[in-house]
Image (tube, rainbow, N blue to C red):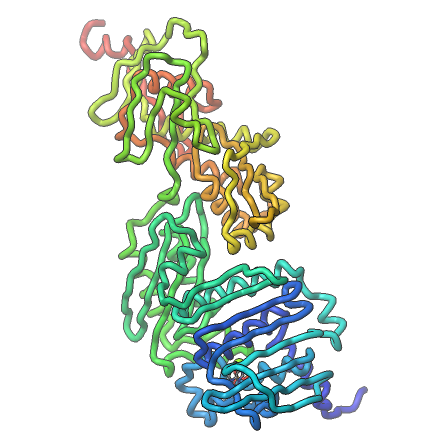
Length: 566
Ligand code: ADP
Ligand code: MG
């Protein structure tokens, strides 16, 4: 048996470092948190190759005194707590005094800093875990930390490093979160010399969220209180989403990935699908942040209050929904270019319009949205009698009066069309005006580029950035290309069962269902006839995708009986 020996500092420091600095993104997180703790108003993060080749985090915060630079790099050296009691009311993000020391153990570090009020600052450099230089230098107020050769002494760890795009996405994700949480601090994230995300520090939380989630639909917010817990909640309903959208959660300004918070959000998302940003505020003595070296999990004294607060937000934000609302998707434009006499009409109130002239849709880049009628109109075997006051369409087929629910019928038509497109080879609709994606969105897109391209999205790197040049042609359903892209991306992110195609077509079908005409929509005769035909071309015309009937039949023979004529 091996005898017990005390580990040398060289070994234990690397063991311990692994818990704090697991990967480039966790190094960035620790450094950014230090900048926030130093009350920086400006934080710039610059990465080379997803941080694998180099990380710089620079801030204009309070800085470190020249003499204390070596201390800052030591294990268990911190300016944030000094006694056990301090653990009871931690308001800073750091307090363990481990991050810089861990970095020194696994990388080469350079730290430049000038403390607030000091005339000059200094530089300290380390190599292979040892300080190699500590010299005075002129530098701006604040701190710059440069990390190179990460894990160079740990080949095993290096081997398991994720792709540069994966690291970048993680960094971008929590920098976005901190940008939302600290709207008065300006954040810049650069990657290989290009800015991928930036905020201005003007303090407008909603605007920062809109940058991340998109402008529409409207982002709502609500503040609630449950017992000791205050919750500021921001929510955006999300097109075609069946699970959680983008979610971020903070407890006293700390971004957390906590099981209790996660399950509270999951519960909320089941009722209201969309993007969530939750800011919990509670007395620091009621939450234990000292559970894990990476500090992402916390322990609440009153778990129930977390659920209650989230539930209360859901109650305020809206009625529970069974199908996700497509608030942002423009509803369909239906054209009847083959029918000369149909009445054009515009319905601004419901946000969608009918038009007869193809010119009316010429500047719509994506889908030509048609209930196709045959060019050669045969004598219709079906007669359209009109629309009842309840919105139902009334037809006569010579044997019966048929009442149709226009919404259910349109849902069925859209659903089958999307399904057949998804099952066959992909039809692609080229956009007349390609859209340059916001860098944040481009970053997420990059992660799922293969799947998105395979399903019909045309994505191209151009001098302007990533361009969306084509989208899957989803038959007669009209969506904003970017809305379709965001919804598909969200579905891919939430995808657990692996069948990308099925996941995407279900998302599109849900979107199409929501974009279907409403019961209250007035249809013209031609529209009603076109809908009839489309419905009867479906494999299952009699029920909508949710199992409700699309049509109810009153047979003439039954009517005879009921009127006592037989
Ligand atoms: P912790 O954040 O847990 O205290 P760190 O190892 O991350 O531990 O940092 C050690 C100390 O170095 C901090 O307590 C702080 O005093 C100082 N420090 C680190 N980064 C900065 C920064 N960007 N600005 C000012 N001081 C910093
Ligand atoms: Mg720290």
